[in-house]
Every structure is written in structure tokens, then in C-alpha cells.
Length: 374
Image (cartoon, rainbow, N blue to C red; front, side, top):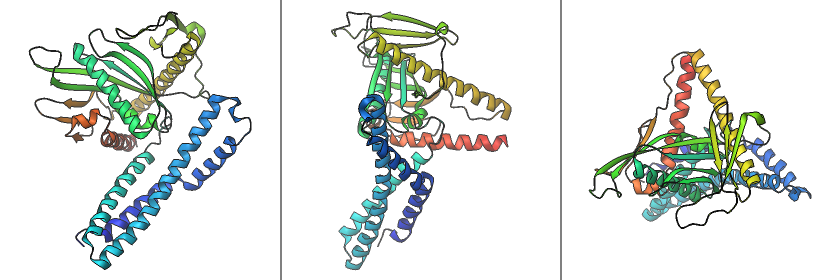
């Protein structure tokens, strides 16, 4: 056989074994049993929010166990497929086995990346905010392109999303938008997207067809849980209410249901207008504000640790990725050096390779920082 299955298949098994150890299948099985017990409680749905969290956590835990079990079975089947192809000299069967081998490797790579997400908040849902930067209407349009990119990525994964607040630009695109991705490890996965994104293209808004560079900022924070201890005194909050708005031609609310919440000590501002009532928008705004304060606290602690450790070069820098549509086609992550040659696919949500490279890069940076501090 032209393909070296004798060395590749043991490598696949070794990778799966490593993933099983890190995942701790016994612990995962115990978690599933506990969640199944909670889900079978007769009063489960007395609290709808709590019930949804339990059933969602159970579904995701079962899916993780199932993925690992199915991969083990697929490797077993692959071995049989290779033996039959070799015994019968079947070239088509060999090609099929090679394709299956590559498919298993890709699935293992995705699972392996998940094992690298071990940060304090990595398991949480993610709240993503995109803001248009320099570049005028092109920047606002770019912000909307990034929103679609992330929503399409989540849709491909089957992750629920919810747009929480939108500020539309006057001519086209978005000034800013905040949305939630509800999935295990959504924050850990998407946190590598935080930073300044840069777009280079022939502007569709320039009647002279000139090339335009525009920027958008992406912020990713973990969504806090009710058990998190982030208390905000009422005297530190300024709350304004106003009417929700939409782009031209859309209806707007006739009541002051939208909420703008300002944390006076830090100046952090959160706006919410997705919910139907002022009370719901206030509660949503408070959760996001608490999430941002939680992340701010962690960043301050990290900065203090860096200061104590000395000058460690682990900064992400302001500009983290370039999307070039003219004069050539390329998406390049400036931290990892990972490049993609099909920007259209990337903007359509095909960003897994970029996310994986970012996660591996971040783990490497943390490891180097820890070694430098020793």
C-alpha cells in the first residue's frame, strides 16, 4: 500500500488515548450520571432557567462522551477496512480508508484543542462585542461582516446565539453589536478572537474604486453565572432608559424599554435593547456588566503577576488579523502566522483552523511565560 497505515493508525490511537486521559472519562461519566439524576427530578421545570441549564449541560456532556466513543469505534473499523483492502488488493477500498483516516485525524485535532482549554472561565458561554473602528462606512460594513462570520460559525456548530444589542451606522453596517454564544467552551474558544481586525479591499462605497483599509475591534468576555461573586453597589450604577431603535424602515418600540447601564468607577457602559421589557433589559445589562468587571478583575490580577515575573513578551498586540481582498486574497493571523487563502470561506464562518492556531499559540505563550518566571 502507498499510504503508511501501519504507522498512522497507532498515532491516531495514541492521540485518542491522550485525549481520554485529559478528559478523564470516569469523571465525565460521573458528571453525566449526576446530570441525569437532576434532569429526572419531578420539580425540574419549576425553575425554567435552571432546567434549561441542566438539560443543556447533560446534552453537551453526553455528546462529548459519544464523540470519544465513536472515534474509538471508527479507528477499530479503519483497521478492519485496511486489512480487507490489503488482502484483496482493492485500490478503491484503500482510497476510502485513506479518506477515513484523514477524517478521523481532523476530528481528533478538534477534540485535542478542546483539552487545551483549561482556563478559569473557558467553559463559559461567550459574550462578543464588535465595534467599528477607523475607516468610516467601510469599517461599519466590516463590523457587520465579522458579525455574520461568527454567527455562521456558531450555526455550523449548532450553537445557539442571541444578539443582545445593536447600534446601526447611518449609511451601512454597524457601529457596534453585542451577541451571546451559548455553548460549552464558547468563551475559551472565541477568546482568541479578541483584538483589532483589519480589512483591505476595494471599497464598494467609493465611486472611484479605490482600495480602503478599515478596522474593527472584537471583545470577548465570559458570561457570568449566578454563583459568581460580583456584587455592584447601587450607588456605583447609573441607569438610563430609552426607546429601542432599528435601521431605517424597521419598527421601533413605543416604550422606554432599552437600558443603558454605566459603572461609574470604571466608566464601563453596557446597552441592552433585545428584550421586550425594561426589567428584562436591565437584568441582561447587569449580567454583561458583571461579566466585564469579572474579566477586568482577572486582567488586573494577570498584569500584577506579569509585573512580579518581570518583562515577559506575551502580549497579543493591537492588530491581530488581516483580511486582504485586494490586490490578493488572504487572511493572515499576525500572532500565529497562520494564513487562509480563501477569505470568502472565512467570512462564511470557516474559522476553525484560525481558532485552533490561536488556542495553540496562546497555550505556547503561557508556557513560555511560566518558564521565564521560574
